Amino acid sequence: MEAVKVENLSFAYPDNTKKALDDVSFCIDSGSFTLLMGESGSGKTTLLKLLKKEIAPIGETKGVITISGKKSDEISFNSVGYVAQSPETQIITDKVWHELAFGLESMGLSNDEIRLRVGETASYFGIGAWYHKDTDTLSGGQKQLLNLASVMVMRPDILLLDEPTSQLDPISASDFLATLKKINCELGITVIISEHRLEEVFPAADRVIVLKKGKIITDDTPRRVCVLIKDRPEFEGLPSAVRIWKSLKSDADCPLSVKEGRDFLDSYYPNIKGKIDVPLIEDGEKAIEFRDVFYRYDRNLPDVISGMNFYVRKGEIFEILGENGCGKSTLLKVISGLCTPYSGSCTILGRKIKEYKGNSLYGETLAMLPQDPTVLFLKNTVKEDLQSGWTLSGKKESDFQKNADKWIDLFGIEPLLSQHPYDLSGGEQQKCALVKLLLREPKILLLDEPTKGLDASFKNSLKQILHTLKEKGITIIAVTHDVEFAADSADRCGLLFDGKIIASYQTNRFFSNNTYYTTAASRIARGRFENAVRCDEIISICKGNDTK
Image (cartoon, rainbow, N blue to C red; front, side):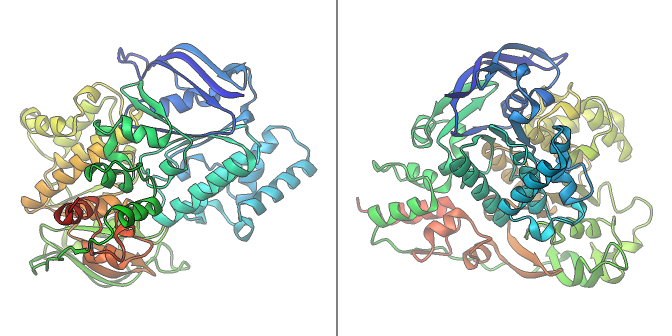
């Protein structure tokens, strides 16, 4: 039975001649698990929202959408569930149990039916321990699990998810996806999910639809898609095992998961051993230094930062990992002066933060990309916003264009300049926000989840941009859940736990020592290729020793 049928669907946003979706057609069987993938701005979010009539975007729509045999505007609101990218944006009540009950109350169910459904759902999702908690006290992983449970309590037939793990740490993301697969397998719920982090979701899918510029370019099983797009840019976003397989030009079936990747090496490279040398990082002048720093949001609350000591050298890329809610974003706020510690010393470029008066810490000294980039947007178009940021930082208006053009070209945002920032996809907002910050030419750049919403191709471009900035002496500190990006871009990485940076090592040493906060490539290479944490390192060792 068809759960979703889309026929010749096209969509354009108001005052925009470019189509976000262009003659899209497909059918999805009931009970299947379908992955939508594609570059940022390819139309994934637009397509998902059009499948849920209550949140369908305003614009010109052509074509037919059929849900469970009915036109989309004829089905009840609870037939199709939707989980958004940001855990915070979907929660609307103060208590966990309120959130679970809210949708059922909207359906007009009796109190007895509501209590039964809420109790059963809370038990299924393991929410009982925090059932009475305030929603604003939950971690990001808990909030996203609550969002999923709040949708599932209404018993939808179809579940839509738009990059649901983009703001989750690796462990929370893995747990969330495992729960999602359990729902699909045990309850027969049709799942359609959009994602950029594909290491775990790609092997779990029954089917993959690849979008590019609003069109479907591939629609097949995961293993077939690996073959069909192996010469396209979208291939770079596929799991590590797939990319290793392609580069080694094997005639074996394409491995999809870490387990299959290890089996592939065992079968085709059984006697190969290797080691990646870990270079020493030379000491240098410190750009940022914390000494015994303590910070809490309220005197009656526990410390978020507790006796922290760490430093970052000038011209270094330092990336911080840790679970949701451990204090990574708070740390960036302390560095930027937005939060003031109650004890300890924070030094920026040799001066204590409190010695920076007025706005002297910002502009050309320090700039920060917040977790929600939309807070940086103040104007009605991207271009107006970039110009506003330029003039507010004290620069001559006449110099704007020549300085802006290089960043606009580098980030590929020229087609977005006339659009409202809020009409952009999450990845496009990230790009525009980064351009606005880089126009300030800061000496220190703080990035909170910089790869959120970005496709693999642009992540590689962003890595090159960060390394170019580093060569110019700019210091970069990023907090991230994207372990693959951190392994590919950082000089050093640190783990934030219990209010402290408990480990900060050269990147290969950091990830090769970790079991959970590590890359898929490291798991594939573990016990065989010492210190290898990236696909290119595994490929290099195999090719260097390959006798086949």
